[in-house]
Image (cartoon, rainbow, N blue to C red):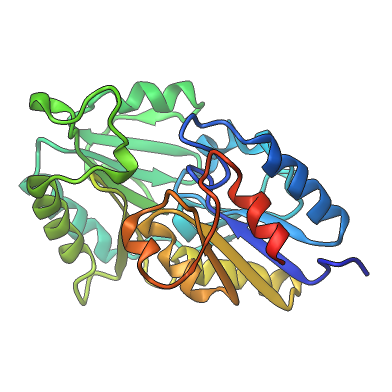
Length: 282
């Protein structure tokens, strides 16, 4: 048995595994190799789809299945198979329809296991997804078959002179955007929708079925793997559920202010090496 045997480390990807430049700091790679050699299991939990995350999962060595769609699927990239899914309930169709009708100027996505349907304003996001290898579909909503694993609502805060080339969108704040997306989030999380949503970015909301948050699915994965300790680290509000579910929880030093103020252990900034700092403390 190694020093880390029985520990499952689940990390967010953007601004946790990677720095603001979207690159993995060498310190993280070196640390996770030591962690795995010592018997630890490493997984990634991301809001990305199965296919969009596939374009980057090999950038960091891991030895456990990954959590994608913000908790709606556990996927084994080595064997290329789904180990567990939690699809959105049928009630989500009515909710999605209402939001689409009320906010036609926003970008909407329905994310199925191996394809994404887009609605509303494109905002250039479809092209980004195509570059990541995600098949994009256009069809009337009534023709989008199930299962739906996640739906997303996003805006474009850079329009109208807001923000700029150097703006840190992970920490962006704007009263108008906060009011708009805060209201949408309340509607998604209202009783009876069967959904739970979170703001991965100030202008991005992602919704899954109740019981399918990152935290609940991290615990599912822990049970699958038979680990005695769950360690989680993240930087944004969609990571809150797994930070609360963890036996030990860590927040990136340059993470969302809301998380930094909640009493979790704060690590080095993401460009220095969040995972390296976490593993050094285990």
